[in-house]
Image 1 (cartoon, helix red, strand yellow):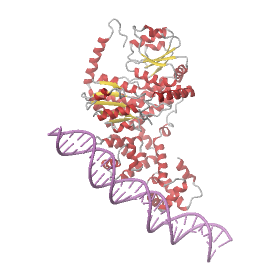
Image 2 (cartoon, helix red, strand yellow):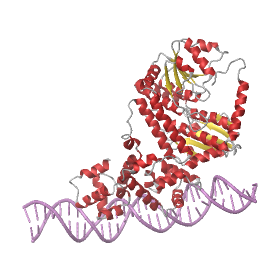
Image 3 (spheres, protein in one colour):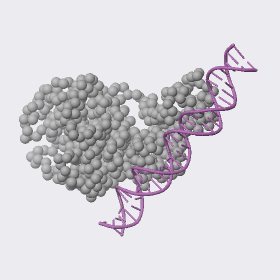
Image 4 (cartoon, chains in turn blue, green, yellow, purple):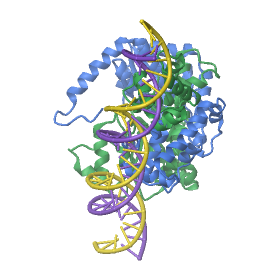
Length: 286
Length: 286
DNA sequence: CACATTGTGTAATGAATAATCCAAGAAGGA
DNA sequence: TCCTTCTTGGATTATTCATTACACAATGTG
């Protein structure tokens, strides 16, 4: 794996075009390096000469020489069964790699922290079209809330994000009732206004689904279902990554459960989106 | 392994030269098929035309076409996450556990997709107090943008989120210049208004840092640094989880780099927050 | 703001590679 | 043995490919 390692080390004497090439090589390793110069250049978004200059800078005499070296590595890796495992075990050198490793560990622990039935309860509630869904988050977790709401909006009607309800807006609270489903994100340190909001909507008979950490927000006592996620990270800030993964897992589960109902809705929304698009402009997407 | 299987089946309509070629291909699979016709011919002990006729007989239009097919197999075999790992670990029971496993795999691939130097460049730019930082995202990635901005705001001054700049607000664009650092999230499908915004601020001399997927947004060509994150998931929606992990890694790196500068700022902000807190209420936090 | 330096893409060149043609050779059947 | 059919390799041609030359653009420096 000498070449790949070299690419990942990322010498700082690399030019802008070089970096684009490195990214392409890493993204489609080793395939993109095994076709032609023009192909690699096009995939990288640079010109042919930039590719040639790049392999020269790496120390190869020519592009074919570079390919030959790549091929040798491919051959070795595909014909020796052990080398595959060695690649997994490398303990991570740089701090960023180490952080990502820590993240992977968070996900592993998340799996052990929640029974599948809890996810199913959540999906089931979200699949019920009779509920009005409100999503609420704290200072940091509000972005998780928004992300979830964005997806839910694609899958079902009557979904929105809300803010903690303050004393100056009792009419907002009054609107909550038994047909409301409130999804709350509350990780440590638990936010007073979020907790208060949870208590009030619970009093009015709304259902609560909670995303929290293993120490559990006080809201857990009020919730119909709660999903726990570890938050420790290698920085002074807590990680919400596991919560994010749970959101996506929920969305995947909900999509599967709703099946063609969700599909039909998404098509409808897509059609409406087209109508909203400015007519004069060309569509760059795809 | 279609091609290898085909070779091993050993059709009986193979000529003597064909068999030599098959033997060579299987003996050094797939390397010998990935170099030139002449090379394979020499290794097999046959002539160049025999090789060309052989791949024709296999059903390929040309020798390059054959190579392309071979490459696709190599790519699949070397990059398929499950083929080698699923056997080792318990394969995951429920669909939610399976989704989380897929997420962990995203993180593993993220590690191999970005050289450490690219993270360092990003952190370095963010640590420069002379830059004004603007964070921009698309339909879904806007929540990543917000999450990043929220953290950055704790660590450094002059940080904000922005929206794609439309033609009705040229004065917003006018405010961008060489002292601006624009962080853009643009995953497939790439959003036209975000791309346009990137082009315009680049023209005005602003720096761009890009978070994108391995296929890379068109913005990659304009960016001073870009971080790639795989997005495949087990649902019809793309995953932004890897991007989220990158954000947190960046935040961790930036916190470490700024050291007590960041600490001091966070204390200042905390003191200000206390002043903003309603006096009559008790603090439930902690 | 002009300068020098470096990086980049367009276009042209030369080299390699794949494909074709054709004659020679091997295999099988009468 | 001769003939037919199929296979093979040397020589040639047509492509594709990697590389170079040069001019423009970007970047950093005084």
